[in-house]
Structure formats: C-alpha cells, structure tokens
Image 1 (tube, helix red, strand yellow):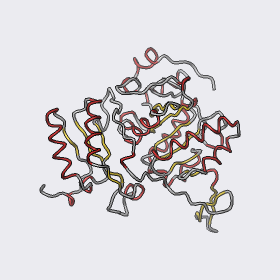
Image 2 (tube, one colour):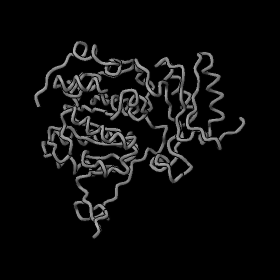
Image 3 (tube, helix red, strand yellow):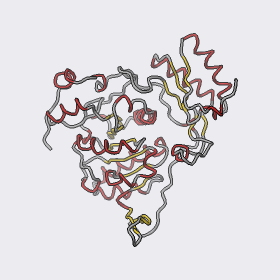
Image 4 (tube, helix red, strand yellow):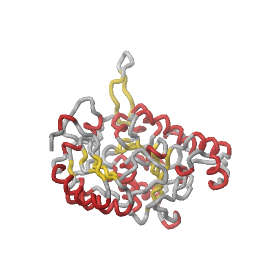
Length: 354
C-alpha cells in the first residue's frame, strides 16, 4: 500500500474542528524513541478521543507498558469525520498520537471493546490503518490484533477480525503477550506458530482455532477446538487490587473529555450479582483497594495533574466498605486545595443519612 507523508501542523490541524484531539503532546504523555525499544504496542479505543481518554483501562495499560524499558505504548483513537476525510485525500494511514507511527507498523494492536456498538469502528480503524480486516488475511508483517474488555466474553459475532482475545484483567496478561510476541519475532517462525504459543497462555482465546457445530435445523450447537476436543478458556484474575499499577501521572488532555478528572479505582467487581448486569458478572469477584493506598494515590495523582475533582470508581461505590471512613479523611485533606470528590454509581438503596 503506497502512502504519502502528512505534515499534521500544515495539512491537518488548520482544517479540522478540534486539533486538540490529535496533538499527542499532552501533559504527562510518554514519548519514547522507537529505535531504543524492542516492542511497539498501539493501544486503540474504537471511539472518539473524548470517550477513549475517559477509559481507565487504557490509562492503566499505558502506564504499565511504558514502565517497561523494552516497550513503547502509544494511543490510537477513532478520528472524527473531518480528520478521516483528510487522511483519505492524502492517502495517509491512521497513526498513533505520540510519534505518528502508522498503526500497521506496530508489533501489537490492542483494542479495548467496552460496548458492542463500537465493533463497526474496529473494522473502520483497520481499514484506515491499512491492516487486513480479517485475521485469516494477515501475514507475518502485520501486527497482532488482539481484543480485550467486557465485550470479548461474547466475542464470536466479531471474532473474525481478531487474531486473539484476552479474557479478564489486562494487567495480568498483556506483559505475557508482549514476551511471547517478541520470542516469536526472533524465531522467524510462521504466524500460525505465534497463535499456537499465545494459546498456551491462560486467558487467551484464539478464534481461528475454534470451529462452530450446528444442529440439524441450523442452530448453533457448540464451538469445538481444532484438536477436536472441548477447550475451556478461563479469564485472568488480578487477585489483589492493590497490585494494580494505577497511574499517578495520567495524561491530562487539552480538550474536555467525558470524564475530565482524576479517576481512582477503589473496587473491582460487584457483590450484587444482578442477572441483567454484564459488568457485575465479568468483573467478579469483588476486590477492594486499601483505603490508605487510595489516599496516597489520590494525593499523588492530583499533584501530578492539577485537577480539581477526583472520582472514586466502582460498579457500586456504596458497597466499598471503607467509604464512610475514607470520605471524611479525603475531604479534610482536599478541602485546602479546593478539590471535590465525586461518587459515581450510587445506589439509592445503599445510601443512609450519614
């Protein structure tokens, strides 16, 4: 695919509605020399910058992977229509924000799927990047396209577009994926061997290795592994939330995003078990962060960002047992710097006068 170089400051920024979406030089951004690292990872969110930059999962993975000296992780979001039009006019590929590296030149493209309606944007992003849509059409020089997030617990409707699927907590599994990919690149073996090695990791599902079986009337009966045996894939679990590498230097956007504040995860999972709630099922069991650790992370994050609001994140914040003691302590510490506390996901039935 022949492409043309693009000067963003000359060819794009003067002609788009919000150039601040694409600058890539925000406060606390990490920009590494790609020649000094061995692994290039693109962290993609198939929605606009304003939505993607509010996703705590990408913040955590961005921080975790860039802590590694051998790895550079850069962000990719779905461009707005005006930006996309210019890319197509210039015959230029979709690139990362930090170093403008074409997405197809990364070793791994990790895509976070938080809701089903973003699936069509995955195909759109692959087209803009010049990467074959279907996993079966990709070769050894194409990046490994891997999906994660709550949607992948029922990934089959979009499975043909992904080489691999990571089930469960990304902090646990992503470093292992990088190591397997690096070993495969050094081995010179075919791409099929990469998928075989990845499948040995706990929490990895390889769509190409599973084939559907149908009832006589055409209804889907089951999926069988290529070996002919039933293979169960269990999601990866971070047992202690205190070990989650929560970023204390999150990127501060120049434009307003959906959740424009420090977001601090204090609890993962939910005790309720509501049958209609997808998140309550896939994020179980409940894991709490130590309140003292919450205080330390909150103060450090506010110091490194300048935000005037912090959100304590949980599927149901009222179920976080240390909350009653934590909030008064935080208010006492944060009041002098005029910082407010936000408590999302409050259940009316879980509230009391206190």
